[in-house]
Length: 234
Image (cartoon, rainbow, N blue to C red):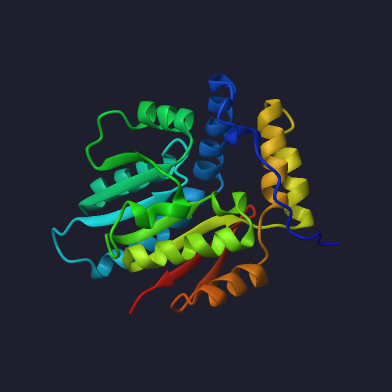
């Protein structure tokens, strides 16, 4: 039976978390995004949209809850290969997480790391400051009201559209994540299980998008318990 969505604090969100344990958790997330389709799902949408991008115009992308910036790095690699100039503003609130992200990003000039609360980004950025916004494996950390707040902010800050990239909640996904983390560190096991419990059903995702008023929201189910909700502006 499907249980109600339940948000439980994740250990990696603790401001005093041990850096070595945090790095292990972020490494697991990078592996999940790389091998189980999180990064590929984002690139699939960008590839489709890029057919309409003006030649040589830099596309501005906002990435929320960036973690160790693996999605921005994947976008950067794809954009370089495809010869699409991009500038990615990668946001995270957690200081130690951003320190790990800085180590991962290195000297890349097309990725800017910013410490900020996603719920208050309109204090930092003007409306329409970006072409696209992406939130990956992040909104399940929030209650429904805050999810809608962040979606509204993403919509307000963009000119072209947004991607919500997150976890499906269900009994199969719950079992799968337990199997995937059998040999993982304790923090990874805990956070992976509570993340799935805080995930979303298709109906919940579309209902939240409707309540926010997103343009033409489209739900895409991906393998291994992932989904993307895409809203493309006319």
